[in-house]
Each structure stands twice: as C-alpha cells, then as structure tokens.
Image (cartoon, rainbow, N blue to C red; front, side, top):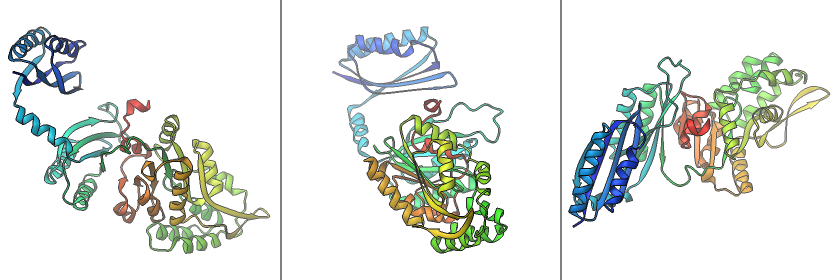
Length: 402
C-alpha cells in the first residue's frame, strides 16, 4: 500500500544534501509530489512531499535518509500525510493567487508583521516569501533598498477594502506595498511608458524655463495646481506657455544639461534595454528636452509638445496637439498596437493627474512619487525608492539584473 510522507531537512548548507536524499528516494521508486528549498544565511531548509509505492519502500527510505543526514550533520523530520489531506491540498490549487511586494529602504519585522496581519484578516494565506534585493550590508546607508515578495493564495471578498488597508500601513510605516494578481502577464510585459517631468527627471522643465524667463513663481504655482488635478491641463499649459514669450533659445541647452535624472532611472532603462523591452516617453513637456533624455538613456520613442521658436525666441504659442492626459492614453494604445502587444503587457509610470488616463489602461500602472490624488487612483504606487524599484514589481531579482 502506497504511503505519502512529508520530509523536512535543515542544517548548514553544503553540496550534496539534495542529491543524497533524492538518490535514496529514487532507489525506492518514489514520486516527488511537491518540493521546495531555501537557504538563509547559509542555513538550508529543504522540504519534499513524496509518494512511496509500499510500506516496505517507505521504511527503507526513511531509515537510509536518517542515517545519511545524521552523517551529514543535518536534522530531518518525517510526517505521514493521509490521502484525504493530500486531496484537500490539491483542491486548494484552484484558489486565486496574488503577489504582494513590500519595498522600503530597510525592511523590519514590524513591516512584515503588519502586512501579514492584513493579509490574514482578508483570508489570504502566504505560501511563499522571497527576497528580491541583494544582501543588505549592516552599515548600509539610507539610500539602500530592500524588497520582499509574498505569494498569497485565497479569494478576496472586497479588493477595495484590502487595498485601502495596505495603503494605510504603507503610509504609516513609510514603505510601499504593491498588490497584484498573479497571472501570466506579470512576467510578459514588453513595453514601459514614462512621463518625463518629475518621473524620469527630478524637475519640471517648464518651471526651469520660467525661472530663466523671470516668471518662475507664477509658472510654478500653475504647474503645481495642474499636477494636483485642480486645473484643466490644456488651459494651464497655454497659460504657462504665454508667460514664456520672449525667452531666448540659447538657454535651452544649458537647462537640458542640468536636468537631474531620477534615482534609479539609468539602471531601470539600461536593464529594460538589455532585456529587450521597448521604452517610451509620453510627456506633457517638450520634445527638445524629451529627445535629450531619450539620447541620454537610450529610450525608443518620445512624444511631447513642440516648443515654438521664431527668430531665436520662444513665441509663447502652442503648436500642434497638446499632449495632455487623454493624448498620453491614445499614444500608449497606438504604441501597443504598433508593437503587436496587448495593453496588459504595458507598464505606465507617472506622477501627475494628467498621467492617470494612461496609468488606468496599462496592465501595470504605477504612480511614482506622485501627488495624493494620483496615488489614490493608480493601481500601484512607489514613493520610498527609486525608479528601478519598478523592476521588483515586474518580478525581477537583483541577481538577474547584475
């Protein structure tokens, strides 16, 4: 009569443990029903659920494994599993799966405790935990970053309530928490579309132009109100452009060269390029600066507004169609069609209210260091780390990006 046994082995990690155990099981014609292994600080934890064809085979396997693991200095535990228990476990495979990503400069036990409690309250069972970032030095500075990914199983009764609870603890603890359905699209993204100002760069270009024109305070106030969603983007854009009339063209290059890239931007785009992703800038700013950032980072596409210049002076007029929120969404759709991919395979990243339309239609929409209105409405938000933290939301580990 066949027997099902759960085998747990732990101890100092060393070569040959897994091969020794599976060799013994192979001699006894075992089937491996489930297997998992983790190494934490050179300490191995190996678990296997096996099916053995008879009581005799089971007894021989248990005896040999005990002897071999004792000789290796490993601890081993055996637990018989009933066929009913196994059948119940198999039926659990139909439950919905979710990926929860915790991001912070440093992750504490309090962070994980609070997150695990919320998941449990909403009927989710954590069945796997993985560290996506590299090993963190004890003397890491505040600019370090840490990411832990949880795989959770279960049906959520009210996703809105769960997201609100996760957002509350993220805000209280100064961490980011992303909650995603675990589906095939998560690791099959193919394009990432970025806003430029205050996303790829740590500046609002139109504000920098305004400072050069001597109207900095006026334009900055309009920009801030527009990004908060308090003003119609087209109206605010025309108002700001009018204030730039007469600005000398010669200042543009200097402003472009001084634009600071956002933390993690270079690493993110470089990694995406190596992995074959398409990238695009969809900006309510200006093509002049978009093309500069495009060349600097190696971005495939750039769509922004044309800064009209006549006789070496900025005219203050708007030419062509303004790249507002709706236009960004249209461009994102068009690029997806052009690349032959679905919207589910697109990641969109932005910080302002005019980014919400594209964030809402992308498979993964991320509000990056965004205004409260945008954070509240976007599917995901990152506020504590740099742009390269987006790679963790896409499921990549540091070691895969080195």
